[in-house]
Image (cartoon, rainbow, N blue to C red):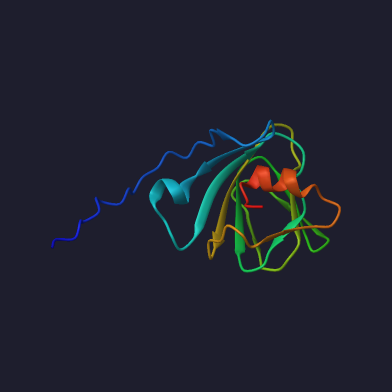
Length: 138
């Protein structure tokens, strides 16, 4: 019996956040498009406002601002992050990202290890909305 050999892995993907998650947020899911399994990489565009406070139990996240200005609250400390700047957020750290500029904020978020079910939503936040925005399981 011969095992099927998978086709070549896709090496290039379009980086345009065109999957609309809400009125404010859209995403380009790079990991899925490229068949990556050991980390999660997505490019987001946030029109205005803030994302809900959350943490990841096992994932470290690296946010790289591509366009605009982000304000990222990590454990109560505010960090202003501009174009071509990055911030690393350790696992088990509460974080909240907001668009601090006029116009869209575009950022790359790289997370490892990839996990669909390791997010916790901060008390007082709308968990249903957060899960919908970030594509998390119930």
